[in-house]
Amino acid sequence: MSVPKRFNVRVYGILHKEGQILVNEEMIRGRKVIKLPGGGLEWGEGTKDCLIREWKEELDLDIKIADHFYTTDFFQHSAFDDSQVISIYYFVTVATLPDILVNHVENERTYWLPINRIDSETFTLPIDRLVGGLLQEYFSAGTL
Image (cartoon, rainbow, N blue to C red; front, side, top):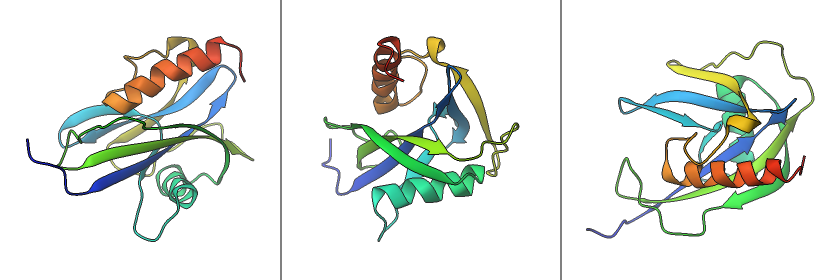
């Protein structure tokens, strides 16, 4: 195995309301991926600025960053290229949430998933799967 030559920093938001969290379903290189809304850090951005930009681009939502939830603390080779993935997850809030959410990116779907249906298999990618299990623990402990 060759050593990855770069880092791929991803930043995701966890929005919850009425016993549900917001998730994205999208096609990445011909593969259906279920994940939390967010995306890749661009040069010159901080992690919070990245998350605010991604939510605005994808969902046209103005979010506020609440608490940090998790940052990858193990090595994860990207499933898509020769890089090391570092993912950062924050809880987010919105002042106004429309009744119907429209994803502004082609071939993506955004929907509410009941918290009681979240487990380590809910999400597609390895770090997200770990976070799914952590979210299940977090919400089952009544930490809302």
